[in-house]
Image (cartoon, rainbow, N blue to C red):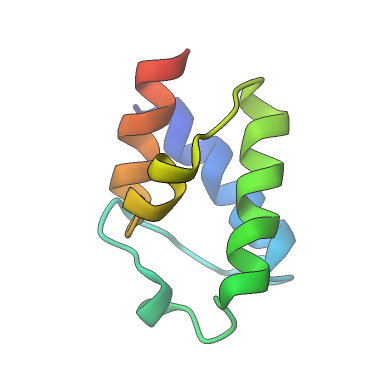
Length: 77
């Protein structure tokens, strides 16, 4: 799990152009000012590329925080 969150940390920093951004499993869109529907889709695309997975529409809707992304990634890799 630590490796997954480290990889996600790099993706979030890239998407939000903020090298100081720290995420936890509890981080939600409400915690990051620029996290809107467009950046959400950018996150999905980058996560899919990094981990070689594909999210379903239901999984994308379900992922309300970073911890839920981690759970989905763990199930797929």
